[in-house]
Amino acid sequence: MRRVSIFGATGSIGQNTIDLIARDPGAYDVVALTGGKNIAQLAEDAKKLNAKVAVTAFEDCLAPLRAALAGTGIEAAAGEAALIEAASRPADWVMSAIVGAAGLAPGLRALETGATLALANKESMVCAGPLVMQTARRHEARILPVDSEHSAVFQALIGEDISAVERVVITASGGAFRDWPIEALASATPDQAATHPNWDMGQRITIDSASMFNKALELIETKEFFGFTPDQIEAVVHPESLIHALVGFRDGALMAHVGPPDMRHAIGFALHYPDRKALPVHRLDLAQIATLSFRPADEARWPALRLAREVMQTGGLAGAVFNAAKERALDAFIEKRIGFTRMTDVVEAVLNKLSAHPGHIDAGITLDNVREADHLARQTADDVIRQANWNN
Ligand code: NDP
Ligand code: MG
Image (cartoon, rainbow, N blue to C red; front, side, top):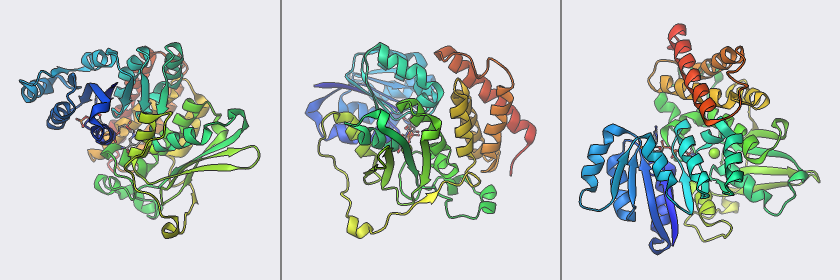
């Protein structure tokens, strides 16, 4: 039996992972499931999958988790240290699907045990790509991408000579506002931004799709994961979300990965790699789809893409600063303290402020330095938001 752990089990990716694992009950020995505040879901899944331990990230959720698991023999634990302890437990395959920078430390710990890490948590790559890759190499652990675009690139590269790659194109649906007039974006509400035309995902990543911060993170993730240079990586808007990425080779060929917008494809690919097993996803009827369309990813409409390019060029801790500032700007937007288009203004202001201080962005990428940059960027973002009084 394969030993598996799922970090962020109660989220959108976590639930899709559980869907696949629960279809094949004899095949998996579930070590750890982790969640945040959704204790009812965490306890239900821990019981269904007979996990050894269930961990909530939040100490104040421990009592209800204990109560929900009483008499089952399943251990309950809480807090950051408990997440790391769970990641230290031997497993063959670990899903990293916590949302945000909080996913970095448990993912690194899992790699240190030599486990295969299925990486949905793109923020790990954005904040600390070189550290994540180096940790995997040092411990001979494999990382498999779960983000659909990166899974697509990974699949298009199988059997290919990476030095023959000219460019990588990742696709973006364009999110909720792709057809809105640019002038209307400033007054967009969180509810409007949290509705995705094609994918069913968590609230934060759905809003990040509308602002293109998600694509911005993914451009950086592409650079870190595959080692391409920033000028080899581009984004294109593809409203149907059926082509997930294309890899262009020096002979002019473009290899496209086409599939339904269902995360169980990328999760299942990572779960069964290097095998391809049958997956319960919809089969595309190309004649019925008839047309696939593309539009330029306009940096005037989505300035987050321009910022991503700057972050890729700067390197170092710029990714950690970018991600942390983005997380705070997103919190402020969700809480209606700033308007939709102000999110990029906040992130740009934080990048500019911190770039002006040597050491904040160009220090080495260690877990401590990433944490420090993350902390400083959050504080700076909060200051920028407070001082600017940007509630429009
Ligand atoms: P969700 O918001 O649906 O789920 C996030 C998970 O993380 C939940 O289990 C949540 O617990 C838990 N969590 C929240 N805060 C913390 C914290 N501070 N510490 C530890 N755990 C925490 O997110 P998604 O599943 O949508 O996304 C997960 C990751 O995968 C993200 O990095 C995202 O960018 C990436 N991704 C997601 C895709 C998708 O289709 N959803 C596609 C590609 C990548 P609880 O809910 O119990 O509070
Ligand atoms: Mg993606």
